[in-house]
Amino acid sequence: MEGTYIVTNSHIVIQLILVPILEGGKTT
Image (cartoon, rainbow, N blue to C red):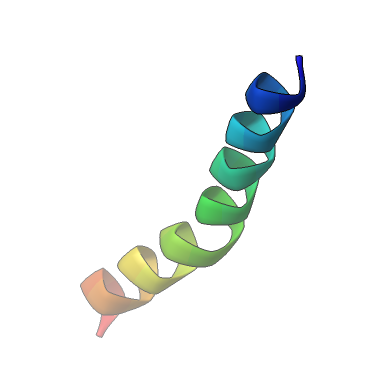
């Protein structure tokens, strides 16, 4: 259970951080 929670939380963080960076890179 805890392992799955950590993976899910990491995925959310990745979306919040990497997605804007990738979109910003495409826009720039």
